Length: 160
Image 1 (cartoon, rainbow, N blue to C red):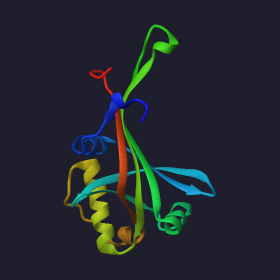
Image 2 (image 1 turned 90 degrees about the vertical axis):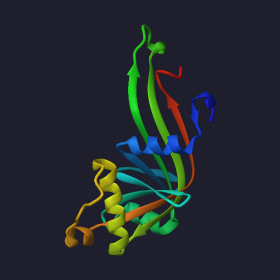
Image 3 (image 1 turned 60 degrees about the vertical axis):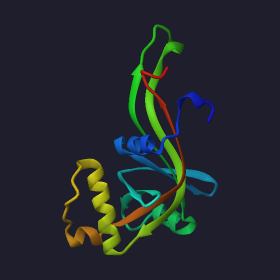
Image 4 (image 1 turned 45 degrees about the horizontal axis):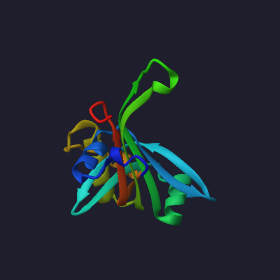
């Protein structure tokens, strides 16, 4: 990381940044090219491992690539704020971002999907006691990304 003065290394802070993000971009590779998909997601700590959960249609390019490689990268950012300046080069932006990669798998059984869907719903609503119609659960798959490595960076008004 070039700007080590903006690097965030505290795992608690990084997890909090992920929990504030509204969207997580899932990055996959196809024929040497990046395939990036913005997704709704949830964050869960499972023992020492931080995991991201997503829901998805059961078929398509994303699912095919995950089944082929079992690997993915991700990026999430939050608190974006443009900071204007008197000249073009004086503009900057404040932000917090987290990037990483890990093993990704497609969850196809109902119990795993329910756990993932509850995690996603908790991320956006703060509630954990959701019920899901069986036909809705049967109509989707969920993804579990087990984070192996991540980095975080922040440019905030109090850290110039």
